[in-house]
Image (tube, rainbow over all chains, first blue to last red; front, top):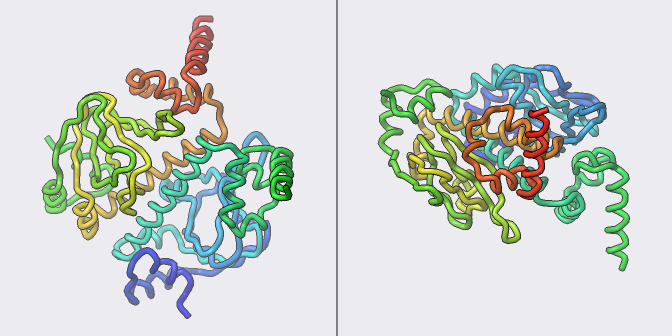
Length: 193
Length: 193
């Protein structure tokens, strides 16, 4: 069976065997247990990550509160881009919400691989995709209420809704856990009638 | 003097003369007068743009209201990425807020240029930069009030504050023009005391 990261790259661009061999040579596998941090706010991010299985959460600390920014489910390739590319401390932490299998590549190796057309195209398309996601989230936050966004999440049928503790989902939606409980009760009543 | 787009690309990556000659061969200059649209919501974006002079606004229509999303001042390279890369109707319009000199490159030419290492690197780094900006705006919208964001804008000393009509600045901040007037008056009083 093909390596999961290889199959992932091939969704974005064609990948000659020789290019893959070179990419694979720079990958190292690590297991993160539940609540382990892949990256801690304030550290400089040194890796590009590929999530093969598990589930991750990006969060920041603000005024003593832990605020969830994004969730990542497999298969996906990610990093703390700003920290990695500018060599500055990360402003967010990345946490495993469950046991996660992760492939890691050192930043300098990822940088050197840019001479491969396949890798360069893959990264460009991936960053474009992440940019689309970020724009969508921005548009949602600007235009829709927390209740509407929660409805959308429910309708999208994202498996991860079952995996995210209520408090993290609430901070992702920018509301208090109590408010999310209220919204949930309201929707439950709507479904029943 | 070097072409302004050439100098712009060189801020991101080294650019051999032969690569620039090829890039330049695909550029066409157009002048947009004040209130002209470079792109209209619902159209498929066919170009990559470089703004040499002038000032632009991205906006969307929502429930009959014109909402400002971003402002772009020169020199900058931009497009409606989602529309361009997926060949689907743009969800936003781009308007010249003043007379603007714009260089345009057809989407298929931009695509073909990706075999040049310089162009590929430039676009990747630019998209990464845009991704950072979008993330910053998202973090601001999630974490800060309209008043705080307006204070930040004032302190950043962006020249464009003087150029943006109040109604556009208000919708960018996600508030009514009346609320922005109130904030302005409040800050004015603070400065005086």
